[in-house]
Length: 335
Image (cartoon, rainbow, N blue to C red; front, side):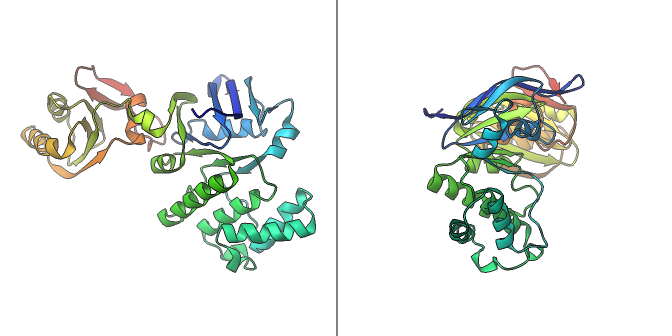
């Protein structure tokens, strides 16, 4: 972790509803100027964590400080230091883009002249200056998200919390938001705290990533550090007509297969040289009675990190049994 002043300090924070711990004894620190990501599937506890850090709900136990202020005892001071972009769109569709930002700025008591100059600057920054006087109802989803980023920057927060900021956006709009967030951090040296279930988003934006599952941090580090924990360099992903235990066992027994992950009718194999090993894997599958419908080779990614440490795909929306077959390892299930 880059040395520097701490923007976020979290110690043993837990949130329970009844006996169920939605966030379970989580601890981490974020330095000023970082883009720090919480990566995990829906229901992992990401939004609950953000709501505690932004003073919207009180932790069951544990503590957290934002810019040095305690989220429970100094909630008002915390709110003055932060900007929050929730997962749901909150801009008023009956107002223009300019009016949405102007009303927000008035809440913070920003003087009229400064307000006008900063609104213009922010609209230009997010690429909406030409649409400033259009009703937000006419904006696309990506435009609304960029407007909401501009709006929350009006009071110059030290820390920006973004909860699934690109959820539901098309790929082009998503990448436009990524470029905007990276630009904001570079120009304003702002700390960004991002939650996401998009692997490529975390890898593209974040200086460090905490993978969270079932309310607990599984592992934390830079994307490159996390991938160094994985066996092999490449992953071969195959979609089969039908996946059987015999096929999985045959692939697992290949000497170059470091790890085999089987789910539904798909199989993923961690190897050192994907292009070299793909033909042998396909031949073994055919010999075991399987039919390959498609195959791809890619370098290890954060999704592979998640699978390695949790035994399931991040795409899962709920509990689901899968098998993780590794050379030299017993079969285990995750759910």
